[in-house]
Amino acid sequence: MMPSEQQSHDQHRDPLSCVIYELSALVLNLLRSPPTPVPTKISAVGFAWLMLGISVSLMLCGSVTFFLGFMLMPWVLGLLMFFYVAGIVSTISMLGRSILCYAMAPPSPTKGIT
Image (cartoon, rainbow, N blue to C red; front, top):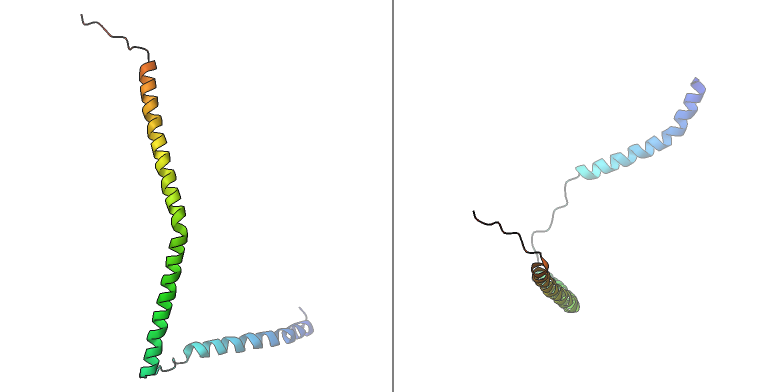
């Protein structure tokens, strides 16, 4: 590469490298900064609002869970009945097959004791 080409290449790369350098310096400064102190005292009103928020969120989650369970219960019962009927049909089929196969089987040759 010629010196003039290298200088023009460096000039085009300098703004980008400057931006990357500034961004990385900003991120590193943010990571190194100490955490902001959390106020240790809470007022009675703040505590009441906290408890109200917790109770409302629990009520909403419980209501949604109950609604989902209520809506899915027919599907669960339907699948239960389907598998129950399939089990009965399978059992009857195996019993019938064992009876028919036993009746249709040729008699086994018996050896005489000599």
